[in-house]
Image 1 (cartoon, rainbow, N blue to C red):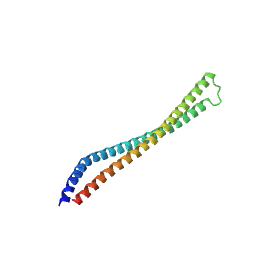
Image 2: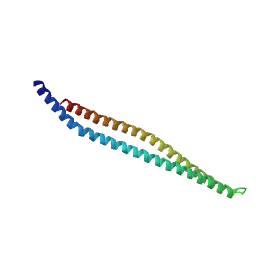
Image 3: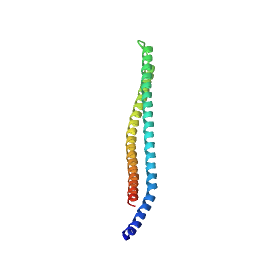
Length: 148
């Protein structure tokens, strides 16, 4: 009988601690899951933006090819003034610069996606760890209840 009385305060203290920790760990788990969903959504948005940029690149490249062909057809076998040739050359350079800019943007977006995938992996790990902590606490509470 005396052993039960000695164990009872410890059991009550443990139940009290579990009662305090459970909502805190559940809150942490919910927060980690929200962070994971936010990271996942950001990654999906980044993939969508990358696809739009790739489409813009393809469209720009096709448009430039068409403009080059029009210019070439218009000036084929015709004498051109040096000023006209310089303008044509300048226009070609601007078009090439535009494609280079878009390619650079695609590369930057890929790097951003890689970084976001790492953040998502970290968020998943944090969510799993938080879930395990809640589950461990629930198991401990169940074990204490079974003893009592």
